[in-house]
Length: 260
Image (cartoon, rainbow, N blue to C red; front, side):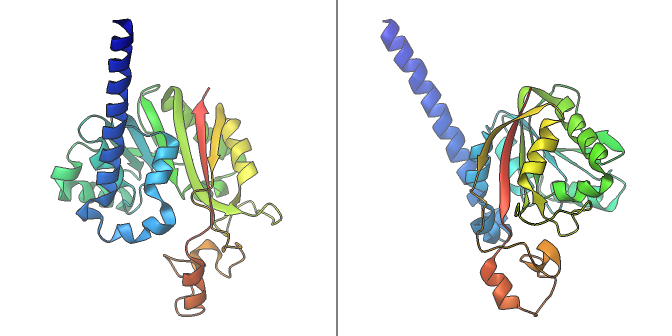
């Protein structure tokens, strides 16, 4: 009898895992992502989010959603059983208004999503302490480097504060080769992976894993206008356009940290 009960419990867990996996695939494949899905070949949303360990029952914060590339996946995926928090510019500022407008434009997809304020180095109104399962940041960390190293550590301490014990911080950013010098402003948009790990761990996190899912060996990080030389920005416009398109998007680190 005990074996039958155990088998049933394990089977239920397997079914739930499969359902969660199917839900993530469905969110990524949804028609509302028609334009943004073109970048999946570079950003690998399924593999990235699976590596971070996302589940549809989680409360998840996305820091600085920007145009909402990942919002289009996360908010619908978390809508029914979890919670999506898009933390960025204050609601009276351009970025905050743009995110709110995107969410309000499709209540069927985003009706339960909420917004919060995350404006390093001064405003951190993300969520109550110890209330969040996962915090994600995609291609944003380099923008905070110019605030100074101590300020950056303080930013990660604020992120640490809102996570539950054992909560996950997922970081994706442009990776600077270890042989190249990183300036204090990270003006190229690239940062050293080892430096990122050291900085984040200094705020009370522990590196739980690294993935090469977003690696791109074609990118040498030596572009005239930094990472923005590459797609999707193509800062040089027609100059070396085909060359830059052939490289694709940047080489990226994908790091999973756990709150200690």
